[in-house]
Image (cartoon, rainbow, N blue to C red; front, side, top):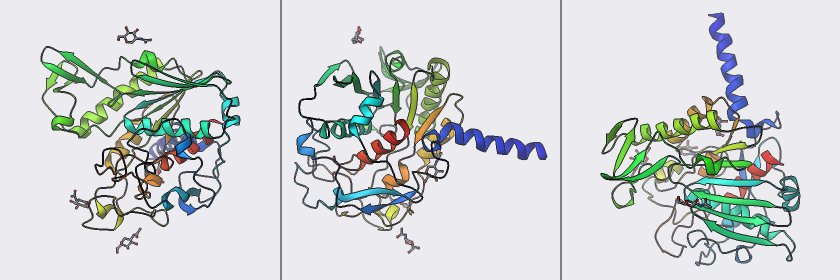
Length: 348
Ligand SMILES: *[C@@H]1O[C@H](CO)[C@@H](O)[C@H](O)[C@H]1NC(C)=O
Ligand SMILES: *[C@@H]1O[C@H](CO)[C@@H](O)[C@H](O)[C@H]1NC(C)=O
Ligand SMILES: *[C@@H]1O[C@H](CO)[C@@H](O)[C@H](O)[C@H]1NC(C)=O
Ligand SMILES: *[C@@H]1O[C@H](CO)[C@@H](O)[C@H](O)[C@H]1NC(C)=O
């Protein structure tokens, strides 16, 4: 019995050390526990002045009439988030390469980071952008800092074979490109339940077994475990700092925020009050946290799920170039700026 309790304690200690690394730098304070407060000084940049924002995220340009959503700052309960200082960040990161890897939610965060840096540097700063294969890189030449995004919907591979496109849950061949960076921020979730025309594969393969389909949550977990094994075998954490981004929530089911019957975010103009979200923790987020807890190497969870759930007002809804209802991505300026403040707090 005693042994069991002891083991339990160790599990808690190791779990915290491995998973909550991002919150560890200050023992007293969980930066992810808090609420949204109105702040007249927000937003942190003028989106019309940053490099072109993807048509999906540029809500003001596409006519969003209510601008209140730009004015909310994340306030942790027991401390303050450090404010973003672009020059300090770039000085600290001099010569380093930072890469976001994942789906369009990663692109969302990458664009936010580029805007945050761009918006507060002197106009004569030299900033270049180029795209090679799946990677787009913005380089802040005065500091030799590059910020890239590598688009990968599933992290694991999709390979064209004779039978069709095969999603290979056991295989990560892009890892060699990724590990050449100093900071990696991973994310995948959005595409795992896509079907029909939006499903970019025809078969799933695990080991030698090939199947037409399977339980998508099990597939997701399998891919995350492949990723976790890759981290343990291939990443030198003395050189490379690792983050995994928690699940970014969408807002299509009003029951999640106490508005039963509502089916999108179109009428949402304010965040939820307080810190609790009726919808609870998404199953996918539990899977992420569980897989991360099994990794030997230090990986920090950017635990953005709850604070993002509270921001039912922060999606583009119909204010994007495509006019479709988008309650999945996030307006820029907006919520992803806070994700980057949390990343900044962990790095600087
Ligand atoms: C781009 O992809 C091609 C085909 O996979 C590869 O041969 C080439 O080396 C890649 N380029 C770079 C710069 O990685
Ligand atoms: C919305 O969530 C509620 C509560 O979890 C669930 O009962 C309901 O089926 C969901 N509605 C839709 C359309 O998925
Ligand atoms: C949601 O509704 C329930 C039941 O009416 C209530 O107890 C709870 O406080 C509400 N939560 C929020 C965040 O408004
Ligand atoms: C992530 O945040 C949620 C909500 O604040 C919390 O319940 C959960 O324990 C956190 N997860 C980790 C691994 O810190």
